[in-house]
Length: 78
Image 1 (cartoon, rainbow, N blue to C red):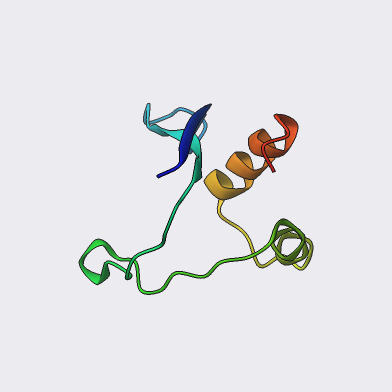
Image 2: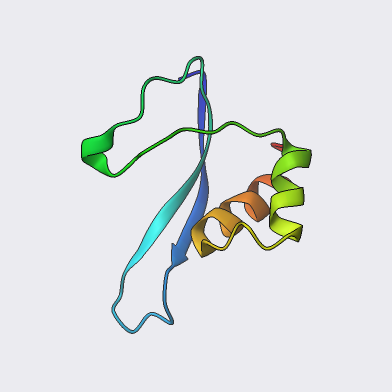
C-alpha cells in the first residue's frame, strides 16, 4: 500500500444499532487476486470519471461507497 488516509466514520443506519464503519482512502501499489472466502468475487478498477458515470446511472448504491467517494472528492484526494 502506497498511502492510507482516514476519511471519517459513517453510521450505516440511523444509529439504531450503534454500528458503522471507518472510511479510508487508499492508494495501492498492486491489486491481488479476489478473496472468495471473504466474499470478494471480483476486483474491478475504474477511473474517477467512470465511477462518477456509474453513480449517475444508479449503479453504485452502497452508502459507504458513496460516502467514501464524497469525502475523498471534498478532500481533493481524487
